[in-house]
Image 1 (cartoon, rainbow, N blue to C red):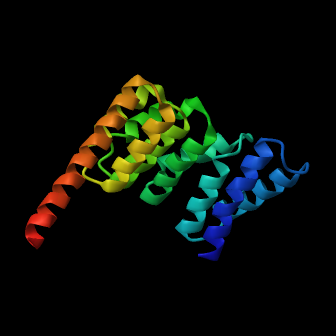
Image 2: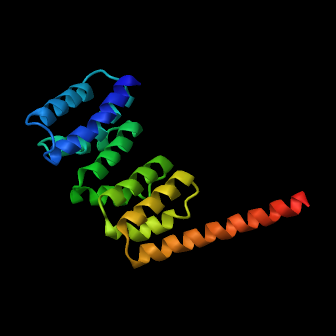
Image 3: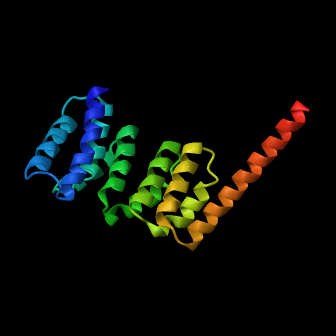
Length: 182
């Protein structure tokens, strides 16, 4: 758990390095540590956090590592690769993210929804609107967040409808609760 948490926390420093807010060479040191852990015998959770953190990096070879994780048979590594795609700010991942919005896995749909918002994939707006009706709460929440990131008239209308529906449902729940207490 400690190694996973540490690997995940290092992503912030890679992002700072990408923004040139770290001393020279520190970002490379951090990336080297994460790459060593990623390629080592660590448990999947550590490897997941490494790939997610490395997603912030624009260093040579990181794109290939993300794609390699995406192609892995381990579903957890695939989830983390989509997470890393979102961190990357690289529009080349758009087709992968859009495809995963329709995944059979709720966890993958959630990761893809967040990545779509992080990557500002405007072409995903309609798919995200459809995810507002998903059976999984986390997927719906991710779709709401991403639509908020994307903005635009279509996203705003959909979010207003969700807000109004939620308020109507809460009002109905209050009414039924009052009737039961009476």
